[in-house]
Length: 502
Image (cartoon, rainbow, N blue to C red; front, side, top):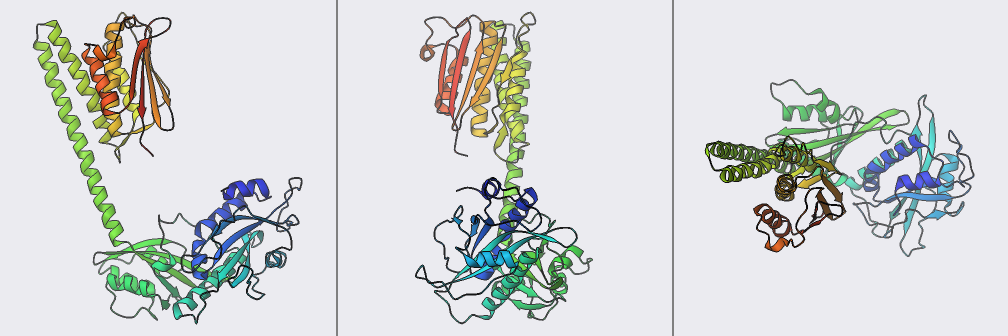
């Protein structure tokens, strides 16, 4: 399905500022759909490619309309079971859209439409973008379609929803919703069904949904909310001798389009205020409420667990460095060259594992930027090359972010391959080439040294380093390993490692 941006850029004359306004509207119009118990479809004027973009509010719709976005309600039955984004209609095919656009007003005329076998009430709302100086630019039309198949006498809650939806629709037509310059909302803002309060101009509660009232009961409220000044009541629940939080008062009184959280008695409630500004004046506000106590508790548990894991990685890194230091001291005391060399190789192997744990001790998750680890492993391997050879291994390509279950064995495998090439191949050039794919990571380590013998067999090799590499790549990472002579001299080692799904 094409995105809103694709459809606007390819099929309309709307500019970047218009597109940004529509993105803001679509990101928040679930609220309007839920309050309306209705489907929303956003129609933009469809202009021919040869038509020059028009300015102001004089855009033509002579070529028809294109549906650029769609939203279904969570509070009632849908009208459109199929997606209609990308649908094009000709001028006159949907008269209410034309009327709302031409007359710049909300249209509610007409009887229910029975063409689909279900009674549907159609309304249209012109979408206006506010401009400096009080003027506006009309961008599109929202078609609001209500499924009347389950129509009945509305309750007090439903009447409040519908009145609030009517006020929001008027704000859309006047260019007052979405809110220009509104700060980013919290992740997973409260929805209508989570809890809703309607306030008057003075910030007093005129209606409280059962869920909203329950949330305030959990905060410690014993009195009725209706008729109370929400800002003062909320402040009294959350504070005793401490100064009143001004941001909390602003949100709870509905004076600004903001979000906040309040905590009392172990309960955490998220508040989102939506001022209702109709006809140039503030007539009240909606406050959406969501009890996020359990969500925040789980988040805190995850933060504690994450800090514990990072501390464990830090301690493992310190212990590995201690082991490496002990092995290094032992190597210095040995008089047998072969034994000293074996211990030095063990120091480098332990060091490569310590590098991964050091990186994980600073990472917020069990994922690491392996490019940094690879560069440190390559630099550490370069230190074993003789001063006469002066070989500096190089990395070509990027590993990217890898899970720790891959990073640790891969770091050890790279250490072994680089060390083996430098000590036995005597190359002048040594490179690590990374070729990532969607589901695999391909790594080639090549050098221009002596190369492996013609009768080389990986399965029967006696080299401890290559046996370690084979165990890590094939056994632990379920990958493929190939070692062969490189054309022109030298050795080429290819690692192909499967990556987990994102």
